[in-house]
Amino acid sequence: MARLTRTARGAVIALILAVVWAAPAAAAQPTRTVSHPTGGSHPAGQGCAFDISYVDAPGSRITVTDFSDGREAADVHAVATLTNDETGATFVHKAFFHDVSWFDAADGVYRDVTHGQFVVWFFPGDVGPYGIVGADGLSLRIEGTVWSAWGPNANAITEFAYVGTVTNVCALLS
Image (cartoon, rainbow, N blue to C red; front, side):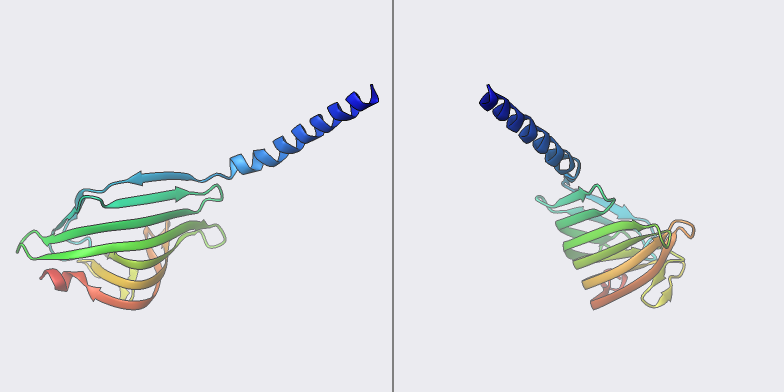
């Protein structure tokens, strides 16, 4: 009888340990969402002085992973044709990048680190690489890494730094 009791006790302990270890692991699983963009637009003043439309090539995808600690990571693999709606000038942008964003409670801002090939759309009043962005906005294609912060009180990018190469998208589409 003592042997059965020892076996039962061992099974109960094993079950309890399994539940204790499995609960945090189950709670910590990230949530992944995959989307396949098809296109969109940026009106004049939201990146350039003219309207821009874009069409994503078939097979483009964005994978967003939400972590239980509040971080969100995005992996983007897309090829988009950007078009100046006034002149018809086009530019093919290959967007291949990894982005991580989170809320920094100490500073009250959303922080972001992006690495790869991507376009940053600045709106009037944002802090950009050349200071405060003017009335037309600014659109830059960057190959490298960007560190930025968006302040909810300012409703604007409040910090911006980068390493890499920068190309003015508005100039490419003019």
